[in-house]
Image 1 (tube, rainbow, N blue to C red):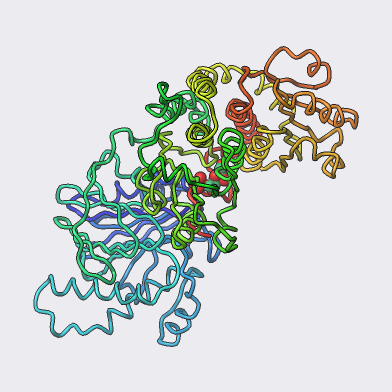
Image 2: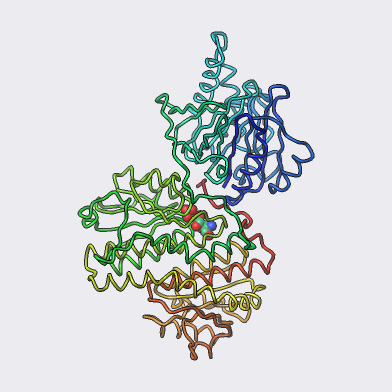
Length: 623
Ligand code: AGP
């Protein structure tokens, strides 16, 4: 959701800016723009409503020169996706140009006050307000005492600092000044920014992906920090407490450039990466000798963990679905009460939470605004907060008191696939760990470890169902509604299957516990509404079969996911997809594969933009 890039150095800025924006495309956007600056010609601006391809064509027609520049992909919040609303925005009659990620909550009152002082607004955005505000603040700072260039730069930094003091909300900002053609100022509060440190050049981006291949030395900017970037220097300061020594880290080798490697879409590539991503999630975390799991970063002693009485799992979307599976797992294996909360509700709901409650935020991106806010709120109340997170160094990873990384590698497709199954693997290991601290026997622990170790291979075999899924997709791609049904561990799996279909194929789909059908949703069943049932062998097999028959008896087409040559189901279902057998607790991971593939194939048949579905963003950084 909104991407920022910036460059200051001795090379042409434009190539990095464009390639950086391309690498941020996965975050989701609907317009894009770039500003470059030269001492001779001032700012040059190119903005488009639409994709980066369009931006590139526009730049090819009117090339942009300059060794300093900023770029942005915008996911519309205030005002529609038009060229006028696209960033960069100009302030103070061409004095300032900036890009902004986040939401300025008090923009309306600031705007009115700036209008009354003669500033003209060209967009409906909250971001343009910041550009004018900085220009206005700068205008009012005395310039007379400025003796040399470094003092003069202090004046620009001070203008930014004073302007930020007036903002309420969230921001990641990259700011240029017409009169300082080698000065790039960036600031962060709630919206991520990473600085790439080069040789006589500095880079800025919303995450590390644009920096790969340019530099491996990075500085994660923290909230309330401002960085002053010039070709040969980086100076970081806290908004209120002065200068800080920048913490330069090395970008991990595996964070390489994302490429399709022969797959048609990132989503498909990521579905096929799951045997490996699951291996990565398991690596080094299973302790056979003690029949348990081990984690390096929980930052709690076994004694402290033993005294935990309750767990809250919080997240959004797919990560919330992972939390639901986590609830079943932890309650069953560890006999610990678990609650799963939408982060967007938890942050404002103020439930009574005992001191011995542990809070886990589950998030692929580590940047989801609601999850971040919910964790902050819980932390403020004194709870130990932990993150189950994929993106190293992300905001949530930084805010939490500890956590577990998924190690799934970059997930580029907007629809979460491999991160979801890795979340489930981590939650299974957590359940095993808590279980072994409490009532789970050594033998039961060993059995779970064996099953987890087997899982990557099981997933490899599961991927063989792709051919069957393709046939099912061809048959039902024109449906307007879908029902996804399962019980026990497969109820959250049903919710996740329905979400996958909705988000990339734009077909309305609902997930339900199969037995709930007769309490209302069965009224939806007709010959045009396919119902997908997960009917593997296991604790609730017979029960699900009865629910399937109820739908069949009402003339609804039935697709069944089974885990053996199940003649009974085959005689009832219109279509069958076969997956390998797995224990109940692993079935949501196995069944995720055909559900992801089905959504993918249907979306392709319907001609949808699989990796960048309409209206959606990969990192949801606004609430
Ligand atoms: C998943 O397919 C969705 N795109 C979305 O629901 C996502 O899971 C949600 O926005 C939470 O994101 P996070 O895991 O990065 O916090």
